[in-house]
Length: 384
Image 1 (cartoon, rainbow, N blue to C red):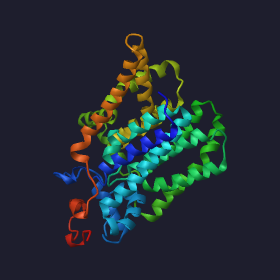
Image 2: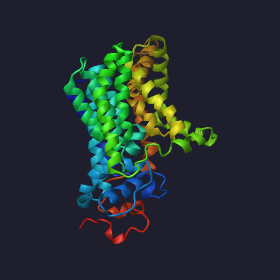
Image 3: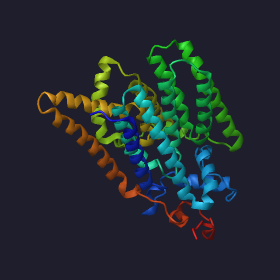
Image 4: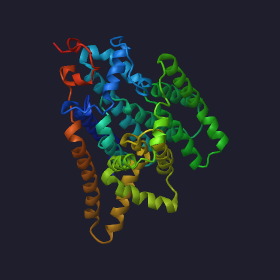
């Protein structure tokens, strides 16, 4: 079934807006029985430090991710800290979905772009971290921007590279993993048989901006901590409990979606005809393996494979549908595909609903336990 681009984009935006609103200012367990095992308290502490309202920085490496807390610092006095994070990250969520949709449409078609972009908004890591008191969405946005660059730039244009470089400069200040956007460009071009020297020339400008971003963070923030977790994580890498937790995180990222993903990857192993899926496997999958030794694998990092893996879900479902077309009516075969997509959405939503559903609140008192111990309760912002 073909769908008009404007209609498809409207549907994609509508799903993104609704779902980001339902997870607006999410602070994970805070609204129930707080365990404070989420990153939100550290970003609140960084924001307070940036506002000169607290004299102590959060631990490394949270202190290096200053862009989103800095932006929320300006808004928090008007709408509260939780709502400010929710608003900025919801805007990033919407921008990411739109940019991703446009890029996938150019690389594939409207139907693939529509399904992939809807799956993006209903994937577990996005519902948990996307509109939360967090910084993850900035990294996802940077990678989507690299896809848009890939899809539009067949020739090297300095202007486009400078625009991408500026975007990466600010994105890396907000989320260091944004630098993987360069990895996407590098591997995608190599897989498409572009001359290696030309590829290196292409990534030079965004790489210069990225290095400048890292240096800027070192100037602005004392000991930002890019390597804070490396050595302890390396020592803990053989730990079975850690490995089992990480396997669980890998499974939860796409849950039912792993079935069509594995079908697509199996077909890709034989044909090697989809550069984006292969790039996602190499860049995102490679980082996940590396993260076991330098950090802790989380669904948010496994989701760095989303550019190709959400497409792989759609492709795998199409393969399943085609394979059963000869046995049952084509209409029923298509219905099975949409039923699976609906189940992906329902399972992911149900999995995260208990702890992650949240809406705009009238006061920061709803997240009071996120503030540093000893912070004066009377200073918590309250809408009058």
